[in-house]
Amino acid sequence: MNRRDFLKAAAVTGVVAGLPAASHAAADPVYKTKLEKALIAQVADDATCERIAKAGFPGVELTRKGITVEQAIEGRRTAEKHGLRIHSLMSGGADFNNPDPDARKRSFDVMVERIRVTAAYGASTMLLVPCRVGGMTMPKPSQFSIDFDPQTLHVRTVVKGDNAPFAAYIDAQNRSTDLTREAVTKLIPVAAREGVIIALENVWNNLWVTPEFAAAFVKSFDSPWVKAYVDLGNHVRYTATENWLRAMGSLIVKLHIKDFRIDRSMKNDGEFVGLGRGSVNWKSVRDVIDEVRYNGWVTIEENNYSDAEYSTIMDRFFAGQALTEGASS
Image 1 (cartoon, rainbow, N blue to C red):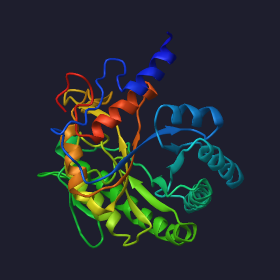
Image 2 (cartoon, rainbow, N blue to C red):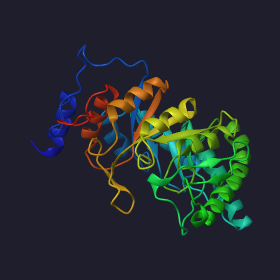
Image 3 (cartoon, one colour):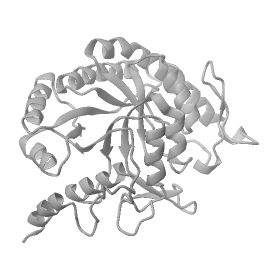
Image 4 (cartoon, rainbow, N blue to C red):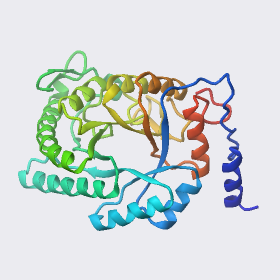
């Protein structure tokens, strides 16, 4: 039996490459929320959709840029033929804080078209990263303690104590907030017309890096068409994933899942690792997902296991069990 045949058989039995099958014994917690698992792919062609469906995933999130509305309609048909739902489109990073107004306008126009493509796919959300900052002195992730004006969302301080070294960063953060609020507000009518939610994700863009600040930012749009796409592993270096979930609460529209191992001696305060090998307490995270009453898609955003292995890992996560054999969370 080759590896492909083994994985296919293992997916049926629930035992994959040393991962014990998810148990549904009475001792396991019973959750009220329902989660659906998805993988990421570039396009929805026959080969990709067949592979994902055979691994036991009902959904997919797509990433390919430059797709036309006509191509998206065809991709939706292909996915549906294989019983898959295209639930989201990663739009890529926008350039909403560019000092050049023409550049900002070009970026805005691209996002308008990507909302249209998202709708053609039949997806409910377009993941948007509004902008990035860098090249100036910033606090280490563990140092952040952000104080901001709840009305303007302008940051006053980013650490306790002396903030003079971070003046340029504070200015960049506030400018990014203003310009992003302006651009996304203009996108809301487009999103409403197309029936697509703009999902703002907590990513490594050095902006809105604490859960309370990020939640206030998303909430400031006061629109059902702007929600939070929470990545469960991206910002554990700032604070525990559970804090992100509780702060975002009902603002959450989708979840990404990956793992991160904290090591404060490293350049980025740690590194991304395979699910179950990092610092995220997955049992606790599953409990809090239930606590905040999130129902919906959880999409894997890493590439450390096979599709079949990921399918089993996700089943175990949904059931509140250890993700890998011998793990405690």
